[in-house]
Image (tube, rainbow, N blue to C red; front, side, top):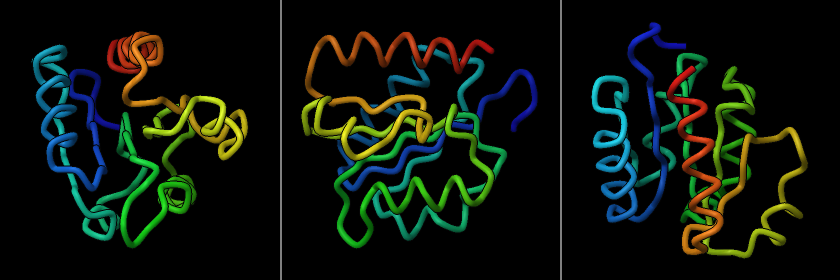
Length: 129
């Protein structure tokens, strides 16, 4: 994990627009805390995955590597499930079928307002620890 002040946030999403959106959001909401890295291809991110990550945001649907496989890899590299959020355009029910309780801190639908509210609470919890 990073030092107490800085939080290392890694965003892996094949959409550069979502990478920019999440990155800008994190830097605006946590300006003195978040140190954000974005990767629009999962294979570019793999060498950077280790236990120093405070928050890992992973898209479920990516070309070349399924987000579930990426999450499994991150956990093998020492990233705590309590620091992993999976995002997707699939329904929350569908996401909960793919990921068992305890595999991640959350699975979030990118487009549902209620899911985004929950995501904000999770982010605040992780970033203000």
